[in-house]
Image 1 (cartoon, rainbow, N blue to C red):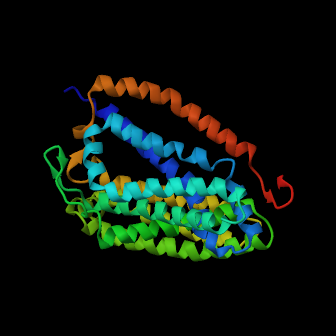
Image 2 (image 1 turned 120 degrees about the vertical axis):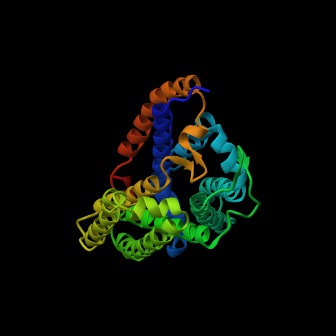
Length: 337
């Protein structure tokens, strides 16, 4: 089978980019659901909903692209990862469905409003937690038997995967709170700043915990991060995380900085994603299956890659346009201004 290394790596980069865009876009969206119980008044909850109402469903386009692209470009990896992570992935999809239905139905009832609010909260928390568990399970390793999954039903469940699940919930809450700082004004904005401090400290703590634990999951991770000369390349990543964290917390103390905390929180996620790339490359299933091993033949990948290069700029264009149209602050009485 003819496989092009550069094309397989390009597909891996494209899929990683799609997943990252999903994480940062749907991350703050899910973060609002996680923060939802901290805002008790209906008027405040309506503001939270309205701040993402124009864009929330479009954010999940990137999840479809990531999953579909994995199946199309790396079917072997898809066939191994899916059985290994059935439970968290199914939980995530069901949670996203409940959350989406709750988002629409809560506006259309008073009698059942409380229950739809609970569905929105539960769907957001479960979806975020499931994504973190899936990430942790992938990092800790998936048992492969030939070209198929060779583990058991609950191999995904471990202290490390549970920790990464909670870490993603806390990280998404940070994105949600900094989004509110950017979109709202007045007392509710100040409360969002306080939440951003709390969840920001929690996020940094979980980043530190995961960073200390990950190199000891697999010897390849340890070699990548702590041996010479690799350490010359990897050392700037934690230093950059520390610098971004400092700037983010500093921006939260200055009232005129309303956009900066959100941008810096996104930068923090980008650095964590870069760290994952450093740990995993060139494996698509760590230490078991490489990107080249899982790739489809050259002709299949180039055919799909050309289509992706046409469609992805279109998706980016309409996504960017939607955010541009609905930019600015939310006003309780007037909407956007």
